[in-house]
Structures are given as C-alpha cells and as structure tokens.
Length: 185
Image (tube, rainbow, N blue to C red; front, side, top):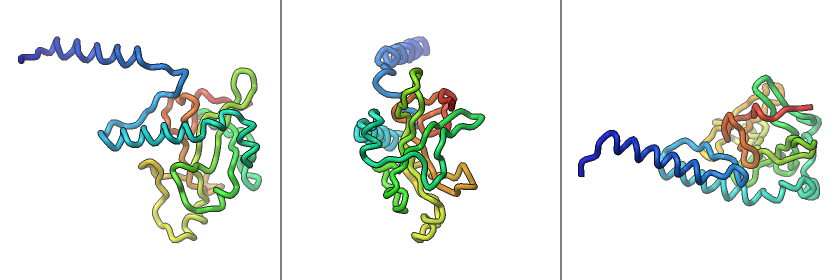
C-alpha cells in the first residue's frame, strides 16, 4: 500500500478531531504526562487511581473531618501565590508530615482554592517532606514521586515538594507548582 503525505495529513487531522470530540473537561483535567510509551501510560493510570482515591475531598468537610488542617506549625497558613500564579490554601495531614516516607498514593497536603462563589475547591494534591527530616532518615538524593523529583521552592521552609493538579485544570501543566488561573484574595 502506498501512502502519500496527503493521506498521512488527513489521518492526522482525523485523529486530532476524534481526540477533540472525546475530550470532556468537566470530568477531569487534561493529563499532561510526557509521551514515553508504557511508562507514561502507567503513570497516567496511577494518577487516575489517586484522583479517585482522594475524590471524597472535593467536599471540604470531609478533609476537615479526616484531620486536615490549614498550615503546618504556622507555615503556609494563608493563600499561597507568586508572580507565576497561585496555589491556594494548603491543608496538611500532620501525621503524614511527620513521616519522612513519600508514598505516591498518600500525598501529605490537599490544596484548595476559591471558586467563583468563594467556596473552597480542591485543586491539587501535594507531596511534602522537610529536607532535614528526609536527610535524617539517611537519604541523600531528593525524593521522587511518579518519576518526578521533589524540589525546594521556598528556601526558608526548606521542604521538598511536588504538586499534581488532579482536580482543577492548570494551564501550566499537571506537575507545575503554580496555576495562572488561581488567585488569592
């Protein structure tokens, strides 16, 4: 079978149209997992599992009932933002924060932001471990989650962090710390 560049172009356009028609942004944010074959597919599937596991926290009352509290020992106790956008309000699980282990299915923090009506809406989950706690456990390299190295964005806090925007679309990407769509009051 001989294929022409026109045939290939039409096939590509058809595929894009099909993907566009199948996209429903009301059910979940677009996954921006780098193309990389089976590994990328595995990570996307694991993120779907994580999203389903934490979906109950779309109801803010469930987070409070399960012991999530705003801030951690006085840090991150307000809406967090930068010139790049906002994150929102960080609700910490203190027991998870005190454990130096990073479990991909148990992020330490739920990140909420205000919706158009001023209600708190779950936007992201965040893995956090204080660098001193991580190193005291004998670790020398930064922790990893879903093939992403946690990083320090605030030297004053000196915490390793990684965000995953699983519940709100972040135009900058699923794994980007700040969303240009999130504003703090």
